[in-house]
Image (cartoon, rainbow, N blue to C red; front, side, top):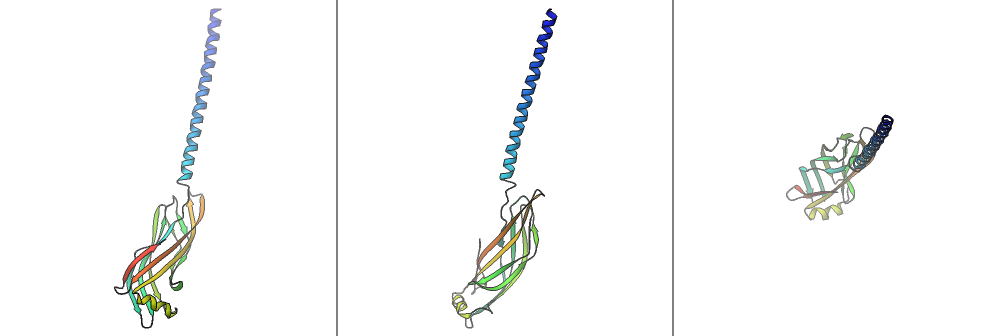
Length: 196
């Protein structure tokens, strides 16, 4: 009889052990699920967040800058870099675009941006040569500007493309640029370059 009682106690303790193992397993599974939720939330808030790439002009090297205040006119030739800065965790593939250079709202020249790709967390630099002329503008506005010995131009552009994340998610993004360029006419150099 003592033997049967011992057997019942060992069966009861075996059942208790199995129950405790199941509880531990459920706790481990719960901890794993909570950990996965935290990791997925952190990834979606940082890596998977798509930011708009930045489009800017780089340093401007003036090759030629001619201005004639008597006939009010100007023409200039310079080299610069168009920079597409991608801060995303995936490449930004953009379509062909155009940078338009303006003098008081009127177009004085354009340069095209070829279709290309800015890699993950990198900046795509495109070297361009720009030629601008005031030949199609009214002379009254130009005369006032040239007499101040500073020529102020604006550069505007818009690029459309897609940011690709994890080889599965593609998000459309459009980059815009608005730069103000000031040339010192007396020294024929760049005075300032500010981009937004």
